Length: 101
Image (cartoon, rainbow, N blue to C red; front, side, top):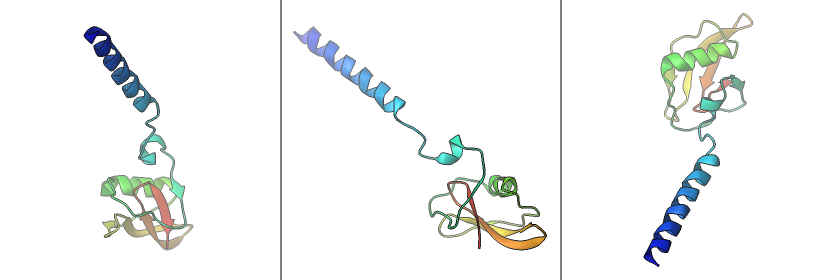
C-alpha cells in the first residue's frame, strides 16, 4: 500500500513539472523576439537592459547617433537620437519597445 502511494506521488510530481515547463512561455518578450518594435507609449517596469543594449535596440529600430541614455524612475531608458535627418527624443521600455516623444 505504501509503495503504491509513493509511486502515485512521484508520478504526480513528474507530470506537474512537465506540464509547467510545457506551458511556461516567456515572461519577457525581449528574450524570444529580437525585432525592434515601436509603440505609442513606453511600458513601465523593471528594465534589465544595459545602456549599451538599449542603444543597440534603438539603433535596430532605425535611429542613428543615439546619445547618452539615462534610465528614468519608471525603468525606461531615454535619450536623443536622429531619424530621417531630425533629432528626436527616444525611449526604450523593459519589453524592448522604442517610443518617440
